[in-house]
Structure formats: C-alpha cells, structure tokens
Length: 408
Image (cartoon, rainbow, N blue to C red):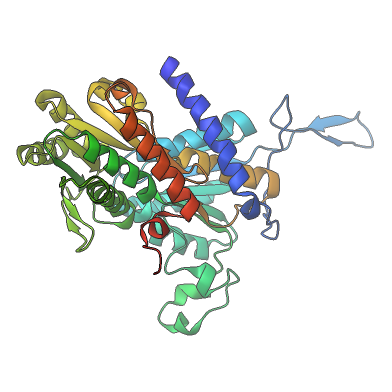
C-alpha cells in the first residue's frame, strides 16, 4: 500500500506540472465536439439539468458521462509497463472526472482497425490508441470517422506532420497526390509524444557511474522510434559520462551513429528477455536496459540469478513488478498516465483534445524514478551530478541543445 500511495502522490505532482506546462495547448476551443461531456464539481462528477412537462412535476435528468475508450497494442492492458501506464491515466480520469472507461486488447496487428471501429460504433467520445504501431490505423480512422475524437501515444498524426503540412484544416499540400491522407482533417486527433531520450540520458550517466565491470548494455523489442529513442539517450549518457570523467565505459546493444542494435522482434516473450539479458551479461554488462515492455521481466529474472542490475522503462518497475526490486537500479519514467489524464480533462472541460503534446524533463512528462533499494548505494556525488545535468538539459531546452557545443 505504501508503494501505491507514493506512486499516487508522485503522479499528482507530475500532473500538476504538466497542466501548468500545457496551458497554451489546452485552451484551444475551436475544435468543437458533437458529444455531451461530463462536467465536474467538488461533490459529484456530473451536473443535473432540469426539464418540465405541461402535466407532470419538474424532474431532473443527469447528462450521460463522457465515454473514453482505449485500444492497446499487443503487449496487453496488464503489461506492467506501457499499456498499463496509459490505462492508469484512464482510471484516474474515471475517479476524478466521472467519465466512463473501457478498453480492448489487441492480440495482433490485424486487431487494431477492428478494435478502433468497434469503439467508434459504441459511441465513444474519445478513443485513445496506445503506441506507434497503431499510428496508420488511427490516422485512417480519424479520416474515415471525422469528427470522432482520437489521441495516440507515441506519434503525431500520421503520415507526416499534418500540423506543418496541413495546418490541421484539411487543406492538402503539394504532396496530396502521393499522400491522399493529407486531404483529411486531423484536428480531432491529438498526438501524445515523449522526449524519453532526455531521461534515458540521465540513466545512461547513472549506469556508467555505477558499473563495476565497465560494461553496460541495452536491447529493444522492435526497431521503431519510441524504442530506439530510449536506447539513443542511454548510450549518449554513457558517452557523456566518459567525456566528463575520463573513463571508457562500453555500452553494448545499440549504436546511435549507425542506428544498429539488438532487438527481440516482439514485446511479449519473457524467454527472449532472459536470453538477451544473459547474452549481454556474458559479454560483461552488469547493468542492462531492456526497452521491450514485459520482455524486460525475463531480463530482470536473469539478473536476480546472475547478480546484474536492471533499468526499467515507462513505469517505475520497483512498484509495478516489486518482485524484481532488489535488482532495479532505477526506472526511466514515461508519464503517459498524466498525459492521458490531461487529454481527457481537455475533453471534459473544453470539448477538445488539445494540440500536440510533448512530455519532457521540463514539464514532468519524463523523468527518473527514485533509486529505492539502491538509494544508499548510489554515491552522493553521482546523484548530485545527475540532478545538475537534468537542470542543464531543461535550461538548454532539450537534449540536442544541451549536447550541441557552443559556437566559437
């Protein structure tokens, strides 16, 4: 219970930061909805509307609560990581705003479109799809069923960047013959994206400072941008540690320069997670970052047997898979729950989903968890250096700017 309370306190703090940071993108009321959204009060999630008849007494009718629906990727709703974190945002919205929530799990990529259509037919006010792999189906559905409102995690509306190419008004650009989707209006489709490389950079710096073998490692589930962005930041963090401290820590499993690395090819097999973890450990890695959802639990199990450490992704794995807490150095947080709650709040209060969202260290959309069992093990000097680097990345306006040498 204590871990769950700590998680809720941390999330409320993060959501406060995100709402403050997203003020500009949640005040656009031009995108009207054709549904009736629930309003909130301090005592009840819905308001009452008085109606009268010529023959009977005055009655009260409560408007229906907004229905919010989530379509998962193949990892499943209880993956202890990606989909589950997004679903937690749905549960928070239900509890705070009184909305109705539902989900459909995708067992294969062929389920994405049917699941989306099922929710359209059910009359969901907002459909949230979880993951880059659902991008094409989500974009096509947003076109086919306009003005149905959508949000997708890990992608701005696809293909391309319609905010730049279309100005969100359905006006095609010169590429419309090649991409007829540009004739669609994506103003009802919100992208929820995350600069996870910023937080992963801090984790890489930490790993480089904590390794006893001088070797750390990483691998991914599938070679897609939302996975490789973690691996990019992690390896760059190791390299930065070497530059600052004159060390030669080796990072296995990914090369940001060639975009080549290790991938299991799935987000489901714990056996693959164990095998990849054991292989990296055999090559000397004593700290491993698996970016593969539940697959990483197989790596954690291997590390418990072999004495290596693990870095979690998306959620705080110390809380979501506490059986591996003794090998969990830190987790790279991707606060999808707060972004989902923010989007649903927009719908309820404004009748719109809002503009493109980007979670950063600065707005609390990404970050590092506590060190938990390793709190006393991480040297104070290393912990302080990581906090300073975090502040410097925020001040610079992002990781790329932080790593760009000053002119002259």
